[in-house]
Length: 125
Image 1: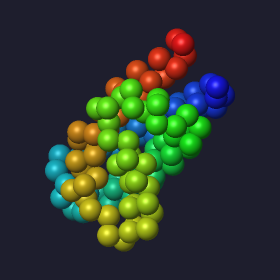
Image 2: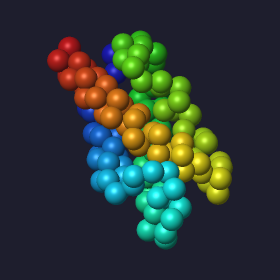
Image 3: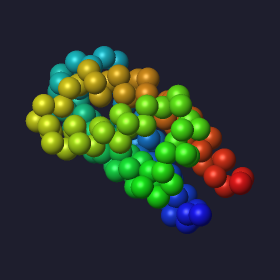
């Protein structure tokens, strides 16, 4: 068995990062908005940091609980979530605004929903 309090802490950090992404993404209507101004670039940078944090915590949770837990939530491509950290951290000056836009406009909502289910399932067991 694993330490539920540690998993809860990591999930809550991810949920906070998602809230920050949602707030920073509110005024972004298209990928070009990230590059249209210094404020847009700052938003891209800040969102990218939160995506790195999310990826890192999901990797940590995966190390603790393994595939079994994540396999119950197939709507999320967990390999992509875990891998985004490496892409953003190692290709920082080549961040693709279109990719970040796609993640924010589509994938974050799915991730948020599935993490809420995961948190509920873990703590109802």
